[in-house]
Image (cartoon, rainbow, N blue to C red; front, side, top):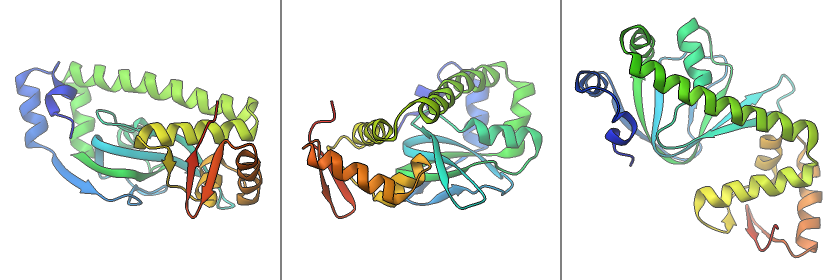
Length: 209
């Protein structure tokens, strides 16, 4: 678990005490929905360990991956909802078993006016999230689907520290905003090219370069 001092070390002692006094730490298993699209946001989450996948759904039931939240980070789309008292525009799902620091939404919003260090923390994360969102837009607009699959597998392999990626074709399709049949066809071609080995609910990476 990430030490709170690693995340909030630049904050003064008073603010660090405020964070400790006004938050709780909870563990969540993979697949747990932390925030659901359309719900009001009750708590502002900061990841201490594990990872959270942020996705956006469409009316026809398809989903698209936006970004992942790593230790020391949070979901700025969530914070936007907190500040504007709006329902969530995204769904956040646990990828790897995670421990989250949960701060009540009204407290997190109030700190914007009370603590400049909190403002800087949010702005820094906002800039990082914006860059990741632009990368996602570029991938959708300009990259071929096979390259997007390769990048998704490489990212998942790096996150898990294993060349064996636990993911279904349907999950990859939802993440990349396409159909399972498209993913299956392209994965079979990657297997034919001896770049991956396909298994039941898993894909073993051989060489994606």
